[in-house]
Structures are given as C-alpha cells and as structure tokens.
Length: 138
Image (spheres, rainbow, N blue to C red):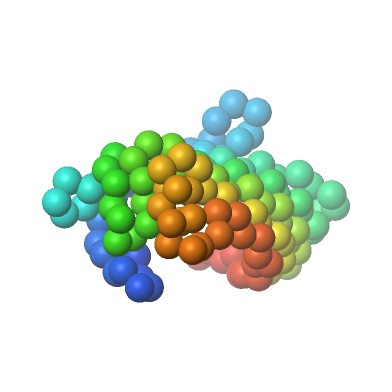
C-alpha cells in the first residue's frame, strides 16, 4: 500500500507512506510502514495484532506497535533510533464481521533519545489510556 499520512496536533505534518499489510504465520496480522517526510525525515512503524476468540462474537485482541525515527526532531519531541512502543488489549463484540465496537487499554512508552527529549520538555515518557472505537469495513 502507498499513500499520504497526515499527523495533526501541535506539530502537523504530512508523510509519504509505503507499507505492507498482511497475515503472518500463526494468524498474526502485521502492518509495516515506512514514512518519508520533508527535510529528510523518516520513520518506520511496525504493528502486530492477534485475535483470540472468546466466543463466536466476542474477540480479545492484543496489539503491539514499535516506532523508529531516522532523525532527531526536537520540535516534535522525537529522537533518532528506537523511540516508542504501544502495547494494548482490546475487547470487541462483532455484531457482524463488518461491524464491531471495541473498548480497551493501551500503554505508550518512549525510549532512548525520544524519552530524553520528552523529559527535558517536562513531559512524561509513559502514558496509559483507555480506547473506544468502532471497527467497520464494507
């Protein structure tokens, strides 16, 4: 897949995105994206998730994300190298395979120079958050 990713917030920016998405052995869904931005910015994001069927309709889904950045961007609070993980657990109810609301919890953590930048800016390097969403496709 290829496209454009736009990050919004305090420091909005656009990236050219190249990626692969598919099913790995043992039914792990994986997503790998290479992001290229202006001024030589680059990032690599890897994500893996797995569906554990508790019942026909109820699914527990562990999720793991990893991020690497190719260059330090002080304004965005991103350091070069391995910078961030997000580990989560989502519980969804599939009314149909095409429509499934979910609720869960995620923990985000920064590492290395990214963590040092965030500490210097007086920001936390760990964050736990609740997530609610709707998974749908047509």
